Image (cartoon, rainbow, N blue to C red; front, top):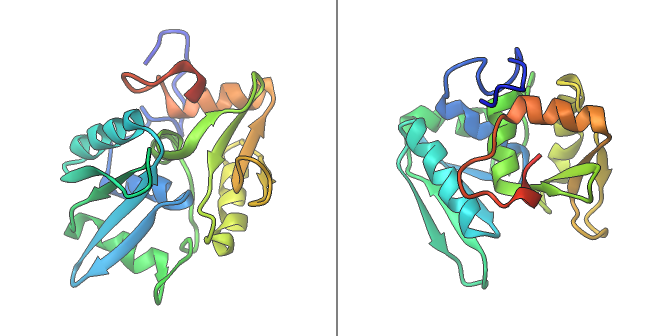
Length: 195
């Protein structure tokens, strides 16, 4: 943690890393699949640094994971192994085969950090966007409410707009709050992709 940042009750330093932090990926475009008493979380990312950072985050949580190129140029699929430690995500985030945030869904620094790694980036000098799943419209309102609850009211950018669907966090104070929550950038992150 850099010395110029204050410790936040909801920030990355507030509690130990947990496999349940992968809810941050599910808030965005991530998906969860169940198998028996286990589950696996995956998300397609657009840059090798994102995959490397997510692999490091999975290792920190004791969850084996892989990053493999997809058939679409420039895209990499990050995927955890099936794990009983992720089973609760499969049980709480799926209604049949449809992803939907569980009752009481909340964001904190660790979850936001994973979401920012997977799908975050600067939008000019005074905004930051967090990408959403294009087919996850049923999640957007709940996720937006969770952002507001941690002091990050955001504007929904629809799927028709450039960079959408995404939540756009704008303003100096909100960006400072986001930076406080997600902590320092992972190693190798280009500056334009972090708060």
